[in-house]
Amino acid sequence: EEIYVQACQSCHQPGGKGGSGAGSYPALAHNPKLGAAAYPITTILRGRAAMPWFAGTLSAEQIASLVTYLRTHFGNDYPAPVTAEDVKKLSVNLPTSGGE
Image (cartoon, rainbow, N blue to C red):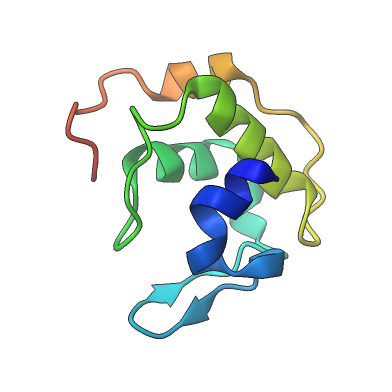
């Protein structure tokens, strides 16, 4: 929750509702894309559209904790925990500058 509040909430809003303004920020609440853990992991690692990448900013443990939090909150019910090893497997061959 702490990582979400510090790194994600300003765009994705409290409660993961998403929003629009200077950009469009998808809702994380009730989001079926979170069902496959690889999707939020790679999105956080590499960024997507206007979202910055967090590879090199957040540790594998922090990303695993954040993805597990997103998958079990905001009306999402994907209880399988994400591990740091899951994150590390998907971070292989990432460009050092991040982005997609």
